[in-house]
Length: 551
Image 1 (cartoon, one colour):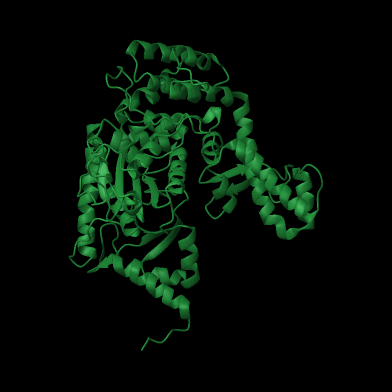
Image 2: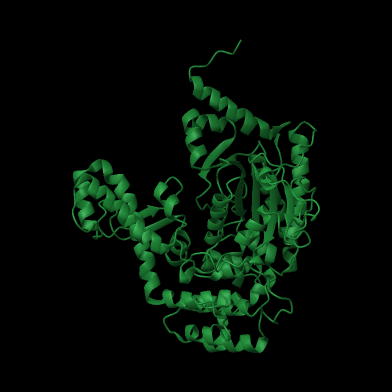
């Protein structure tokens, strides 16, 4: 006979299920496995879905009884709380995860040997958190890594594999869970320096690059509630960019040109439907519409928020960034918009350096793209560039890329990795560059990654053979690939930060390969300016870095 249902009925059943599968499952003889210690108070990290789920079936007192004292949204930037352990409760549909350990960048790439102990601690913590992600997804993936030029990915992959073995051995009552049909690929940040400094023109990446967005909040000096851009009492109004904003999720990965066309169309549709306005839709007309139809207030306000955000991006873009983008694309790809090979990269670069309207960050980004395009340069040439542009104080933003394994000085004798030919794909002229991660994701799903360059540090799942090589006498079944990919996951982890453009690629590849879900993560999310600031500090003592960041 089924046990009697308590006064909270179905909600109580859901809460008991969560307790059993989330809280109780993590406890073992008075301890929380690996990353959780029940004696100490803990932080619980939730996404939008799990926040609503918990709110529907439990109270904060219930969480307190389980040792949870702080509940945070996983998508929001947070101050580190190193003395507290974290419990991640997220829905498996999330395509992006972060470990929220930006300090990992310094410890993993600083050349200071005194940081060795700190690096070991960070690596252990990252490994534990990655295992948490895998356990949340109920996956025991085959673990592989990018073999060169640094050994961070190799070391972290070995740690993760060991902890996965221990986790599933304990979790399944001493019965080791076999490898699932999924892969975990670990990569060092230097695998694609271009995508970290290029001006990206998709909405989210562009906004976070050009506008002062902090903690996913953009402050505007105009009232948003009435959707009219007139000044109020001088106080800034905040626009929060979050996952539960359906419109934001829908348009954030689209090109800014598409966004600027789509949002006014959406607003005009609402206007025409109610016959409240005629002719061209303006912000002032929408303000009048909202007064007449209060129930549309929230819907229209969101659209105007994003239209304002897009217009602010364009106000930054039009004066200087537009011409700069052409130079960046030519340097990044080595060809111009007509497909003609760039014969003299320095000639392409010089107009940017001579333009007084570009700030030092933009000039440094252009210099880096020039150096990346020629696979490193001479000390004499780099010194001349730094002196002519008068960026001596910021020169470490360029030189310190070598600590990430990126050729700066002297030129590398090894050729640059081959890229997929995407010339036939439709794109905007100022957005021709495709982040390297997209090649990796597609090759991994199609089983084309070179097993020497991308070795496994664990047992290779039976459905993945590493190189993808198939004997001519052993033709695979027609449905072999679909059988292999069905229900599998491709989990990526980048040591030292991912860009918004790389996050977009994960969504795009997941959409194109629906039978294999792509989940991408890193220590944190980076913007070009933030990354350059962090790179500049790599050859400074840690106490100096902390002091500068606190100022």
